[in-house]
Amino acid sequence: MGKTFFISDHHFGHTHIIDFESRPFANAEEMDETMIAKWNAVVGEGDKVFHLGDFSFLNRARTQAIVERLNGYKHLILGNHDRGRGRQWWLDAGFDEASEHPIIYKDFFFLSHEPMYMNRHMPYVNVHGHIHGQKYEGAQHFNVSVEHWDYTPLTFEQIRDAVVPGEEQA
Image (cartoon, rainbow, N blue to C red):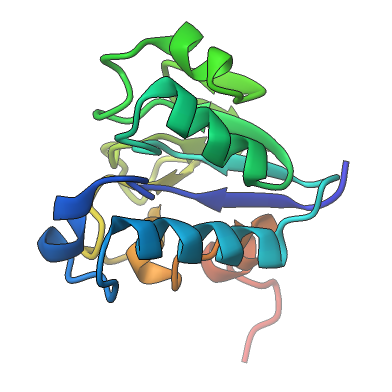
């Protein structure tokens, strides 16, 4: 397996998200094509992507057509807009894995769609989406919503380096 990436809240096919989040696209088709291109520009076939929810508003056939075009092994953690379809729907649409609940990655990163309660004494960083352009302050949360990252998946190393303090002191 190659690199590991994280991203959330694509909302493929969702016309209204363009206005809701001031996305710089003329229509959903332009948005979808741009996001597919940005994904494939960084994710290779041997890479893994954790998608932290709210992937698509399209029917199964159109969602599957997008999933098939995206590079990598794709693991979906269901978001609030995904849960109504159920885990099997997403597997049938082409995801390699689909989780209905948050998971812990590398014993330190709590992967969820919605931000979870975290305080500075908890031994985790919550990597999440859901809140789109908003952001929690502090090192306990890391928002991977597409609006923060130019619609491009982030590597594990980018997230780790942003939240894990280095050993070296000034």
